[in-house]
Image: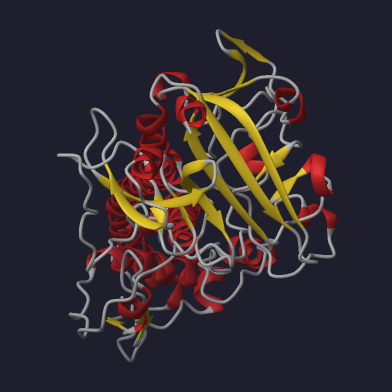
Length: 469
């Protein structure tokens, strides 16, 4: 057979084996030889067979017996030839779609090679059987005698046919042996590719569990695989000085110590390490700011752990953290103040009593009427009706057929997805599409379900502090 040389294309594409090109090949049997051997009808059948034309670069069965032998040898060399060492190239990271496409293509290549080998084996088997039958006919009585020669010493074509037949049979046996080896290698390669594809799918499913499944948030700036956002560190600040031997428990205790200016202060609730908070000092006492939205600089479409620990910039947009909020309120009843602002400069202030549960209750916000009805609270709790907190990766909302945080955006105390969401997507202008507007920041009882607000602030204050003031 011919000699096979490797091209550099395989190194570039990263295929499972090198692509080969034929440098030379032996001449095909002539039509006369095939007629003498009784193979011309078989050649006609092969030429007339309706093999579909394959796209460039895809293997297909050759239309003649000789080309079939050449193609089989090429396929055998595909897995046996060692490729040249690839030139070092700078690393390039492929996307998941590219990895899936490559794995799928490799699997299809394995299936195609296997089908090609099986089809070629069948054709060669049929060819070998016909040639064996022809050999028995050709080696009749005249086969016992030595072939006669003409006066010039040449053997007639009719007497040289058995020798040609034996040579072809030996080549068929050698090709059949190579095909058997190739078949085994293709089967091993196909198993390996199937395992690799399974590993890719498993890795992708694990990453999907760690990151949001919907990426249509136009302000999302964090990508999958990155660390969860943390509250920005405050440098250059010193703990506030008070007459207490410890930091104040909350902003109200700081107010009672005589502080009348709003700003960042360090507090330490009972059983909690100290942390910095925004204190809003009013005539009613000190309020702790737990959320602020004003310009869309922070992505609020975060998982459960981020909402539990807090994220953002305390001097800008931020979420204090559910665990810190619970440490401030403790088992005490508290007041929550909600400050809303629309795009026309109008403002709204809401204030109502709450009780915030711990993580074992999914930080449920326990409310009383009429606020409970306005926010869609229907779960009965010891302190009234409650709304558990819900994120895209921990669904605790009251909709059994829908994850409100996934359908909308951000984590919130969702009822049935349509009452309020102050942690939704921030829009710098009101979108025209209604389907897009529903993902924004809204408070239904003030501006309606599909009006995205411009700015919001949430504050809490212990109830006993209100009475003391």
